[in-house]
Image: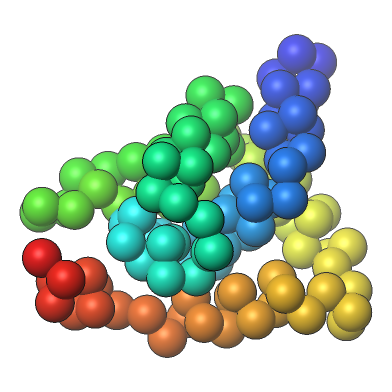
Length: 114
């Protein structure tokens, strides 16, 4: 039960919820997430830490990038995502816009900034 409570607390913040839903649809690096979200890098880092501590996301090194995605070894995380995705209404235009924009991003946009 503690694990479930920790996950729900982590998703209790709107930005963390958005990050989780985006990463459940596509693995991304920090620079890609920053292009989608209107938050500071330090704020994003703090949100990622909370989500990672709750076991919702994981990170993997991919060349010079650290790629974040939904936790692959926790079946409950996939079940939670499925439940949350089904509950999104047509009126949730911000999240739908986030997911659409995320699908268009490529690593080349990050490399150009380095």
